[in-house]
Image (cartoon, rainbow, N blue to C red):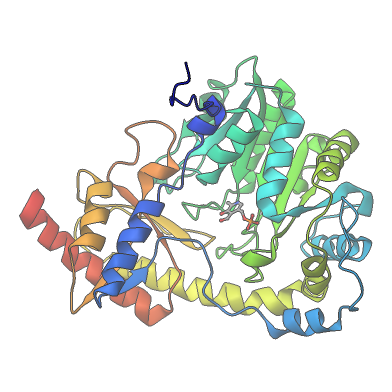
Length: 405
Ligand SMILES: Cc1ncc(COP(=O)(O)O)c(C=O)c1O
């Protein structure tokens, strides 16, 4: 007898465990609020609001109108050359053969994780960390082991001994984000030296995501590439997205002096054939003269950072520090549950028909219960709007405390 019961195959556990963006729900509430005539200041995402320099579009028009063909899997030779030139200008020497062009920094990170780890091997990260590392680790079947940092010292690294406690026989590497998203922390040479000592002692890889390299406001930025003693263990993960306002171009890079690492990333690259040809060509002038394009952007973000830092002192009960880089800060709020506060702020609160969308910091922690009263703020608005947003947050906190505390 025929039945109508359909058996639907189940999806993989890996797919089930893949995290959706923790910010999605709040973003859709924000859209509803806008439909009702409320102005929403978005401080929740890391998408720079500044225009892409016209040189990118000028270069696009110069591209020969032949077949849009696959590019070589490691990148178009002129683009690789341009990345080499970019790196030289920021004081990092790579051979062209040591550079693989990737689909944004994101793909570089997935390639690096897949290159160094077998299934369920471990990579140490410092939390709070860029949430998409979770998704990349799920894709690569790698376990992230978080080491907690503290707002009380501006999320700087713990001692060598403390980090050492998290190293196991399964640890293959340490992944840092420098300057950091979500905290804006920039690690000093001395802090990096602790990691260098540990990767030497335990024979680990050191993966460094330096997509915010230029956004270092307090003097010298030190790259992991500045430590020749571990040149075979370092993997640099980088991207054009943030420094050139080119998030949608999807051009990143993986670079290393370790030929096995580069060769593996190349093979992963062969499987996805190519990074977009047209964007690879259009970006070349920016890579060749980086400071011309990055300096005005960095100066704008420095101003915003300064304004945020100064204005935070006027808000009662918040815990904060001076972020040294990137365009983010994690702040502690005088609330028990920042997710509840953030949702209330976007769903119910308004001040003169305006409100603010923030990112609750729990999403940046892997350890349950961490960052419960913290939010991440991204400096995505001009100085005046940043000030207005902080004023709204300040008034909202007072009202929230009367209502819920
Ligand atoms: C720390 C960090 N790494 C990597 C990325 C990925 O950037 P993309 O893939 O656009 O280069 C981001 C994006 O926000 C980021 O914040």
